[in-house]
Length: 261
Ligand code: FPP
Image (cartoon, rainbow, N blue to C red; front, top):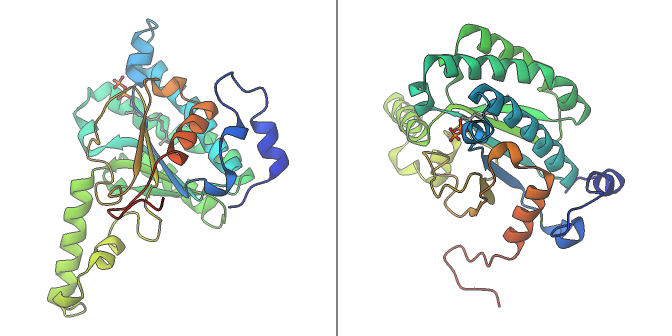
């Protein structure tokens, strides 16, 4: 774990009553934390605001969560920003989101540089509008040499599409003679996923109380612990992260075996 103790303590100053830094074990922080950011729309509607305002506030929450993950020394933070099914939303909302993704990436470059964060995209970004792709390509280049936390943004991501794509690539390799059928094992499949080279999420956080996986990282979450909070994503923050990690640390992870105790 890489973290700066002074910055960490400062980041978590003035805690609320129910949680503080002292409630978690810094030696057992999940290496990969993943967020299903849900409830931007409901957050906005419940305040009489437009859904666009909800997404803008969702970005503020994401910024706090990124900084928090860096402070805690997390290796990988992933977040579900846009699913393959989200194209079915009204065209206006899709346009707003595409614009916000590009704008956010540019706006947050100073933060990503300051904190040495490398960005990777999970999903088929070739299907995004050209402008968004151009910005993503520029941003990716700007932080490709960073060596700190990996921020994996799932954009135009669907787990079934990801698995079908892996199957296609593996089949191509077999028919080209570069891979033997007998060599197709779990590692071979994992190497063809968007998350190749990244550890699986140990903790998945979903906001707004929904008990669903929504076609997210189906392969990678085989042994992930889930933390569901009723908070809408824009209300989620560093304290929510600490609560999720504290809950994670109280779980008995058996991976199909027996408890250590
Ligand atoms: C879920 O709320 C949120 C989204 C579909 C988009 C989330 C995206 C961000 C917070 C910004 C991410 C930024 C980058 C740079 C990738 P919802 O609209 O599903 O809310 P609802 O379920 O209440 O309608």
